[in-house]
Image (cartoon, rainbow, N blue to C red):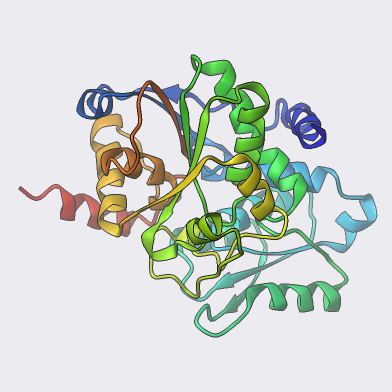
Amino acid sequence: MEIYTQIRSAQQTLNGVIYKTPIITCEELNDLYGVKVYLKCENLQRGGAFKYRGVFNAIKNLSSNQMERGIVTYSTGNHGVAVSMICGKINIPTNIIVPNNLSKEKERLIQSNGASLVYYDPRTDDRESIAERVAISENQTLIPPSNHLDIICGHATIALEMLQQCPLLDYVLVPCGGGGLLSGTAIAIKERFPKCKVIGIEPLAADDAKRSFETGELQTVTNPQTIADGTRTPSLGDITFPLILKHVDDMITVTEDEIVNSVYFLFKYTKMVVEPSGALGVAAIMAQSHSLQGNVGVILSGGNIDPLLMAEIIQRTSQP
C-alpha cells in the first residue's frame, strides 16, 4: 500500500526526533471492565501531544524556499503547539489561526515559542478561509492539522510503535477530531493485522465523524460545546474521510460526564495528567460503549490541560 510505505518513511524521518512513548497498563481498569488495556502515552510526547509527529514530518518535507517564507495553520491547540515548537527552533515564520476560546495553557505554549496568533470567533468565522487568506497575503505554506498526507503518515507512526510494544491487539481505540490520527492509525494497523478492530471515539456533542461514518456522507458541526477541545473541528477532511470509511471498523461517542470521569480515573489510578480529548478511549471503555474483549490498545493523545480545569475536574469527581 502506497500510504503504508509513506508511513514507514515517516517513521525513519522521526527516528531520534520524537519520544518513543511508553505503553502502560492499569490493573483497576482491567479488573473493572474485564479487558486487558494497553495505554499508549502520547500525553508524554514532545509538546504534550501526538501532534509533534505529523507536524515534524510535514515540515521536513517542505522545500527550503517554503521554510524561508513561513507557515500558516489553524488549530484548536495541540497542532498549533507542535507547529510553534518546531518552527521556533529553526526560525520559520509562523501564523497560527486559533479560536478566541483557546485553552489558556495551549495559548501560553504557542506564544512561548514565538508564533503569531490570529484569533477567530468559532461561532461565526470559518478558520480555514481565514488561514487561506493569510497564506495568500503572506505568501506562506498552509499546513492543516489533519487533512494532509504528511500529517496523517507522521501520526500513524504511533500505531507502528504500539505493534512493537504490545501483544497482538484485538481493538485499538483512537480519539477523533479532524481524523488525521484515526485514519493513519487504521491504515497502519490494518496493513499488519487486518483482524484488529480500529474504533474512533468522539464526544457526543461533536459527533460529526460518527454521523459521517454512518451515512457515508460528510457531516459537519458548528462550534461544538465539548470539554474535549481537541475535537472541536467542524468536520473530517476530503483526505481523512474516505480513509476512515475504508479502514475504520466503527465510530462511537461518549458524553461530557464520561469524558470528565475518565480524566479523573487516569489521574487517580495511573498518576497521569491526560486532557479530555486524550482520554476519549478510556471514556469509551468506562462507559462500556462497545462490546470489547481481549487486548485493547488505547491512544492517550495529549496532556495539555489548563491547571485550573484539571483542579476543577478533580474536585468535582472526587466528591463522595
